[in-house]
Length: 227
Image (cartoon, rainbow, N blue to C red; front, side, top):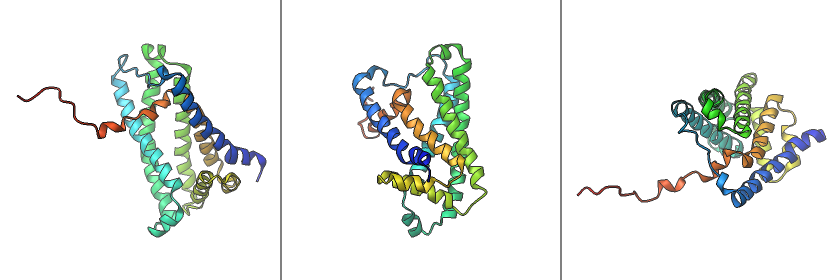
């Protein structure tokens, strides 16, 4: 295993996650006025609705799939009698479907932000850069499905699972060793994913921390009595 591989996949992820957490805390503490989505709905609403819904549904499902797929120990899948090959095919199908849904919405949002004069005028460089970073990550993820079609035994998926699970148990050396032999597309996908964690605190993505979960449990607001 090279020292370059060790840095990218055994050390860099911890740097990215540290920036992700501390950067978010510092921004919330020192610059709360910028802690928002920066919505441009008042400037243009039709394309925003067309793109935002599939983008958010797609990306939420893709992220949930990654989280469950990578961090669930293989012993759990063995107990459920789900083989690595079966899990890989399911991941390819679901990831492909929701990845395309997300890509469809994202392309609409990119077109809207670049071609609508009013939306473009209120967009920062980070807004546009972030959209293209997510686009690149989505494209890499979809390409990886075609790479996976060449080996349906699930072995590379197991290596990626081992990488993620070794990371969360602070075994960086073992994590880097696990991913050393996987296809370059998977490595690029992982590296860009870690890089998005670094970008997160400096972009509008921080609004993810403020998802209104409490709306599901709060009391109904009485607007007008029936009397």
